[in-house]
Image 1 (tube, rainbow, N blue to C red):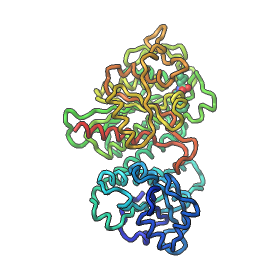
Image 2 (spheres, rainbow, N blue to C red):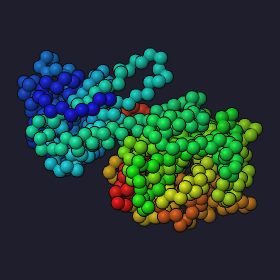
Image 3 (cartoon, protein in one colour):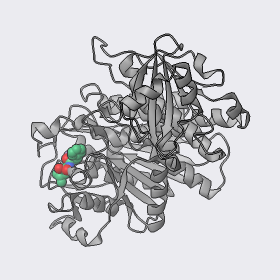
Image 4 (cartoon, rainbow, N blue to C red):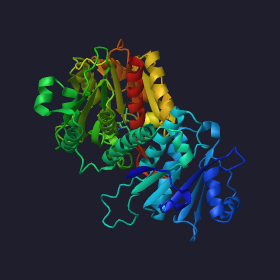
Amino acid sequence: MKLSLYTNKLLAAPVDLLAVGVFSDEPDRGIAFSQLNRALSGGLDKACRDEKFEGKLGQTVIYNVQEELSAKRICVFGYGSRADYGLQRARRFAATVAGVARKTGADSCGLTLTITEVPADPERVYSAMQGLAEGVIHGSYQFTKYKSTKESSPRLKEAKIAFSADDVRGMNGAMLRDALAKGRIIAESANTTRDLVNEPANYLFPAKLGEFAKSLAKKFDLEIKQLNPRDLEKQGMNLLLGVGGGSSKEPKLIHLVYKPEKKLSKSAPVIALVGKGLTYDSGGLSLKPTDSMVNMKNDMGGAAVVLGAMQAIAGLQPECVVHGIIPAAENMPDGNSIRPGDVIRSKAGLTVEVMNTDAEGRLVLADAIAYALEQKPTDIIDFATLTGACLVALGPSTAGAYASSESMANDIQSAWKKTGEKFWPMPLDADLKEQLKSEIADIKNLGERWGGSITAALFLQAFVGESFPRWAHFDIAGPVMHATEQLFQAKGATGFGVATCVEYILQRVRANS
Ligand code: BES
Ligand code: MN
Ligand code: ZN
C-alpha cells in the first residue's frame, strides 16, 4: 500500500474515494466538508440531512459524485465527540474508509486530516497519523488465497492523507512521516498474524510455521533457532513432545531473537514472548465434537501474535532484547497420543498428571516457559487461545489478562488503553490452586468446571514461579477471530494482540531509559 501526504487542492485530489470525518458536537462540519459541499452545490449537506447524519461515532454517508470532482465517491464519517479524537478514532475512520473502498472497488482513497480536526498538539497529531496508517492497512485486508475466482475487488493500492497546506506548514513533515511509518509497521505486522491464523491446518503445520519463522528472520534480520524432536528430548521437553506425539507432523520449538543494532545498556529489558502454537487442536484422545473443532486451526493464534510482534519490533528497533518462543504442535488422536491418566515429567522437573488431553495448551506452554526462563528474561508475556471458559467469561471480543504483580498489571493496562484493544483484568486467585492438586503427580492439567480460565492461568504460574515479578498471560481464545464482519473488518482472523504487545514493549523501553 502506498501511503503519502497530500497538500494540494482537496477538490483535485486524484483518488477514487475521498473521505472526510465530522464531529458530532460541532455545529460546523469542518473546512474539508464545506469545501466539498460547495463544489457539490450543497449536495453533500443534503445527503447528510436525508440520512439523518449527525456525526455520531461510526455513522457513514456515501455520496456518488457526478462530474464535479475527480473522486468518484465521497465518504462522510462520524467521529463522535471531538474530545475523544485520537489514535483509535482516526484508525476507525481509516479502516471504515478502507472497507468502503473494498466494497466499491476503489483503488485509491484520500483521507482528510485538517488541523481543525486535531488539536494542535504534536503528540496527538502523531497518534492520529499513526491511527490513519494502521486503519487503512488493517481495513483493506483480505484473505483470498484459496478462492479460485477473486470475486472481491483487488486491494486498495494507495491512500493519501490530505492536509490543507496551511496546516502542514505548522507541522514537522519528518514527524508526520515517522508516524505513518510506525502505523504501517504495526498494521502490516498484525496482517502477518492474520494471514497465519487464516491459513488452514492442512497447509500450516509445525514445520511450515518453522519455515515461515525462518523467512521472517531472514527478511527482518532476526536470529533463529529451531528445536526438532531429538533436541526437544535432550531438553527434556516431554510435555511438548507428548502433545505432538499423536500427529504425523512433528512438534518443534521455534526461537527467534531480536537484538538492536545499537549496543544496549546493562539495564535494558530482556522480554520473552511466548505463543501457543497448536496448528490444530482436535482435542487428542479427549476428542472434541466436530462443532468445537472447526475453528481449531486458530489454535496457533498466540504463536501468530508472537511472530507478528517480532516483525513489528524488528521494524521499530527499540532498545531491548526480545525473544519470540513458540511451542508448535498438532494435537491429534493416535496410538502414540498421550492418554488421560498419563504422568509426564516436564522440562522444569515438575511431573504433570494429564486428566484431559484437550487441555494441551498449558502443557506445551509449561515447557516453553521453562525454556524462556533459561534466556534470563526480565519480562515474560504469553499469548494463547487457551480456554473456552475465557470466552464464556468475557464474550468473543475481549481477551483475559493476567499479571503476576501490581506493576505488571498497570503496565499492560496502560498499553491496551493506548491501542484500544479489548482486554479485561482477571485474577490469579490462589484459592483455586487447590483444584490442580494431583493424587500421584506434582500437578494436574485440569481443574473443576468453574473458573476454567483462571485454573489454566494458575497452571502456567506454577512454571513461571510465583516470585517472577513481570509475567503477563493473555487468553485470546475469543478475539483471535471474528465469526462475522465487524466495523468493516473482514471476518476471520483479527491480528488482535500485536498492537498491544508492541505498545507494551515500547512503553517499557521508554520507562527504562
Ligand atoms: N484451544 C482450546 C481453547 C479454545 C476453545 C480456543 C474455544 C478457542 C475457542 C483449548 O486447548 C481447549 O481445548 N480448552 C478446553 C479446556 C478444557 C478441556 C479444560 C476448553 O476450553 O474446553
Ligand atoms: Mn484443547
Ligand atoms: Zn487448544
